[in-house]
Amino acid sequence: MNNKKKLLWIAAIFAAALILPLIIGEFWVHIAIQILIMGLFATSFNMIFGYMGQLSFGHAAYFGIGAYATGLLIVKASIPLHFSLAASMIVAGLSAVVFGYFCVRLTGIYFAILTLAFGQLIFYIVFQWYSFTGGDDGLQGVVPPDFLFSAYSYYYFTLIIVTAALIVMWMIGESPFGYTMRSIRDNDSRTRFLGINVRAYMHVNFIIASMFAGLAGGLFGPFNRSIAPDLLSWHHSGIPVFMAVIGGSRSFFGPFLGCIIYTFLMAFITGFTQYWPLVIGTIIILVVLFAPGGILGILESRIKALLSWKGIDEIGKKTDDESY
Amino acid sequence: MPDDFILKIENLNKSFGGVKATSNVNYKMKSGELSAIIGPNGAGKSTFFNLLTGFHRVDSGSVFYKGRDITNWHPHSIARLGIARAFQVSNIYHTLTAYENIRQAILTQQKKTLNFFTPARKLAERETMELLDTIGLHEQAHVTAGNLSQGDKKRLELALALGCRPDLLFLDEPTAGMSAEETHDTMMLVKKLNMELGLTILFTEHDMSVVFGYAQRLTVLHLGAIISEGTPAEVRADENVQKVYLGVEP
Image (tube, each protein chain N blue to C red):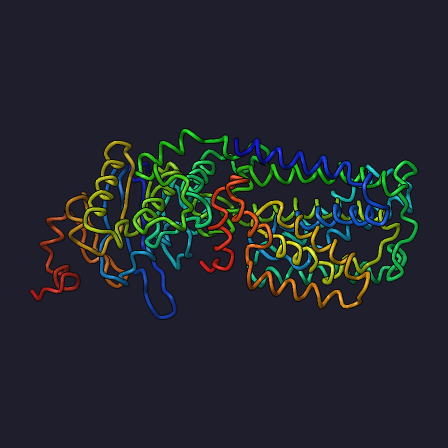
């Protein structure tokens, strides 16, 4: 019954997403595409942050690697988009095999610092390697195939891929592997004594999360028509952190909701003031102080009966109490 | 040379800085035993368990499990062999429900944790409910573990160890912080597990009265070294034990 209700909600949201472009203008379709891509990015980030309990400050590196993989394949080799998207996932995943190996050796602040350091390392390589990546000029002419040229068709293309990716990530989150991640987040030492090789599992999760970040990056290139090294920088790594905190990192859809709020507000507010960072900074402070479970944390405890979501209010309270 | 010892420890040593936490410990356990290690706080009981389960590296000496040298193996590899432990301070998954806590142990034991696509709620339902029954947490199945009472947390702690379906079980002060009644219930359960399932159990305790009714064999640790070993009656009569442990002048 609970699951049926949940499925109904999700089906309704998907139906709304299908008819959305018929109602809104082209500018907002662009914003909607951006929400989908960044929502996928934020959800993949939350596999590490919400499920595994580690804060990555370098997740944009894998988004950027994915973007450059698709971009370079389109610009230099004219590889069709669906193949280059698959390549984006693979290249981002392979990078995570290497860098993740070192990152998962540490936890807490050291994990955050190491992901940040590797992120910046990759950023500087892309930034300096003019002959291959175009350096700080970026990569121009990353155009989607003709049938995806209009914003509307690219929206539907992105909607299908992001939905499929979210379903896969949702399934992983609900699987024994997903629960093993929650176990590691709650108590890694106990998980070890149950017989789990904690580092290896964290590494696998890091790789999966990076692959979906790579997919998001791959979708971003043809949408933006160009790619800049900024996509890999620590600044860009901070965005999914904001989104997850605003939406709520303890639920699967929290970061996506945070992404909707973040992207919509940014589009709206930058329309009449340049002080967007001031606004988002204020929002983050308010959320952290008064709603540590994020917006979805509040919503879920308020309309718990409606969503029949168990134990959410305890989880909301627990977010600031992970010192064990 | 084959022997029927499930656990054999030879000349085990461990120091922290200048403090000798384990000093030349030799210990053997036969399959199916229910034995206890006693000693005042700070005697090195927890350190001893930490060395056996791979949490600390040993300085010197060897640990054999079923004839296999497992000295300095990783905790997860040791757990995989069928050695489980329950902790003194309940060491559970605070944001998961009691049911999810136990299911995690069972799924790990069933080697299903690398399953990415089957919903966990559809797996190990029967085994999880059975264990919840055994441990007496049936009614609290869907309570978030962090909200359980202290006694129930302790019970869940034991259930996590049992979910591993171990052959050898280490219990670090299983009744610490429990009321007299809870202590009795828990020790009866431990005895039942030993008698009915044939589990080999080694537990530590600082309260001697708890130990005497249940353990077949006692080992007394003092300052990291074994000072006495034998049946409860023998240990109680040992002058050394009375001196250092019971505080009785001979």
